[in-house]
Image 1 (cartoon, rainbow, N blue to C red):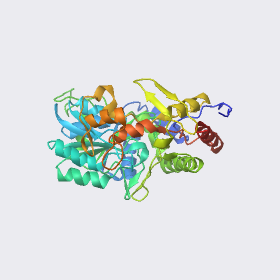
Image 2 (image 1 turned 180 degrees about the horizontal axis):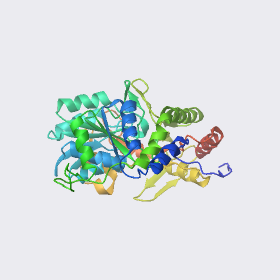
Image 3 (image 1 turned 120 degrees about the horizontal axis):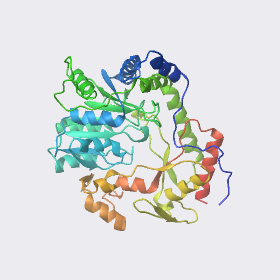
Image 4 (image 1 turned 30 degrees about the vertical axis):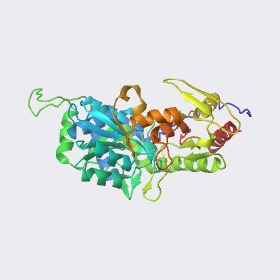
Length: 418
């Protein structure tokens, strides 16, 4: 393999991009002594979010996970309730279901968008007709098949909780993600398309729900002259300082999306001729935010790769590669990539939970796929999420990466297939 010069400054997966306005609003919080979970920055960020996203009410919270927890609570999930959830996602999508005692049932992924498969969701309602809540995520900034998912839920009397943590600014048929569920969330975590270093937002068109979430997030204090508490509350409110960072970031949302799109397009062009595909972007129905650029290796071009719980090994083969080889090679030259999300049904904590593919219950089929590569009637793997995890990886996607740095990353990847 050709040797490259190690990057002097690390090329990251995704980092915050700051502009200066953030400091103005943070200093405003400092100068006015509003160093708490209230203040003008919080109020303005909530207003800006409603304006940008297109929802009626926004509640600023300490994290996207806190927002998801309150959406699950608003959705009425009780101990023992089964809840459908995206399978290929970060576990923050799923854990809030368990916070309320719910039981996640995972719905397999589809190849078109790497999001929840509507066919598998329909099958899940056949198996679990009592389910009344669906928690759905949009992976890597690409909206899922929202119309199909919502039609299925409407037919079965279920409501949608939309996790738009990764897809802030992405639109589906002209509407921004974060507006399609009864309750929705966005995230301002440090590596998101715009950031507060932390923080999240609960979004809804239901005034009563917004007021209830606001109350829960401030320890459920009642309107009394003393500290009166009649229900369980949480310390989930967004800091006025964090809100200052978000407030300074909002004017740059479209700029960040354009920069991320340029990174994606350079990869798409630079990797032509290799036996790989970029993560899908459904440009017919949606405008993604291109949060992370990912790729998936064609099955015939995969070298042998085995992953345990915390380690992976591979055997190099001429003309072939695998995510492990590519990620280790990028790290050798001081560039950061990541595996794609490991599906929830493969996680040790959730391995006993239900998992549904488009052909029904997925547990036995997953075992068959592990043993012998079992495929469905369409000739595709029965467990799509596992297949994408096995063959896919996230590429360095920082919007501050220079074209010259990205060209070297592309050449390193090409060499892995040499």
